[in-house]
Length: 284
Ligand SMILES: NC(=O)c1ccc[n+]([C@@H]2O[C@H](COP(=O)([O-])OP(=O)(O)OC[C@H]3O[C@@H](n4cnc5c(N)ncnc54)[C@H](O)[C@@H]3O)[C@@H](O)[C@H]2O)c1
Image (cartoon, rainbow, N blue to C red):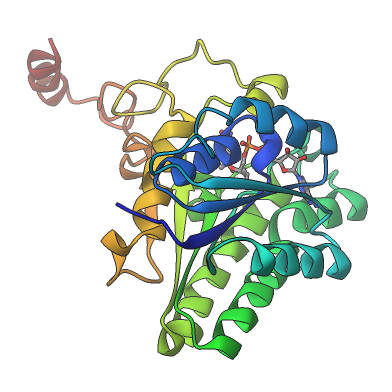
């Protein structure tokens, strides 16, 4: 996989988790990476952290950092402008900014308008308008491109007590598919990754316990940012040249199991001792 001569924007590159790891993978594949974050200190940190992947001769790419708030039109214009001025042709976008803040874990009965609007603002609106900004640039110049949205299993199925996040991520899935249909004619592919439970600094800080490895996950471990970055690299690159509108699950198989079966695949709704004995024989 080679991305030399291509510029790829990574929004939320400073988080130290999925965005930073995607930036590393893209740099190692030779891309010019425009790492975007609204937090200047985080960008300074990744400049140091990614120094061994970027700009050290050989095939490694170049890291350009841009401090901008992509919840605003000005922020988006700045990102597209800076990416257009970076070495290589603007080609790709990885929409990483998103997540669920502590106040967003709450029953729907108590959820207020501010929580709702924050959830949609953090997860949805910028995906539309940054993708649009990049696509306009590409279409005007007749350039092909590849856009990836970082989604969540919580957008594929439902996320109880997480109504703003789950709804926003479900909307991002719809957006991903719609953009893939509208922009296919321009050679712009748009795909998503449905990430499961991934150990990142933010996930740990908001109370997801990394020691609860693999509960509910057939592969019996939590995911890592590298697991997500591998799917992103595939989707961004020409390896996925004939793939658009797809949502690639990176969740250890968790989406496959019906809730009526427990972690050992035992049906929780079956009491017939013969059936259970057969299953336990297999499991044991
Ligand atoms: N960690 C998980 O378990 C998990 C699971 C599924 C999906 N995801 C998704 O992966 C993505 C990244 O997750 P993470 O935990 O690595 O994120 P993170 O919170 O660590 O990083 C996100 C970065 O985005 C930046 N940011 C936020 N709003 C911004 C704005 N308006 N403009 C510019 N920068 C902004 C933040 O400063 C932060 O550095 C999110 O979309 C999240 O929903 C995470």
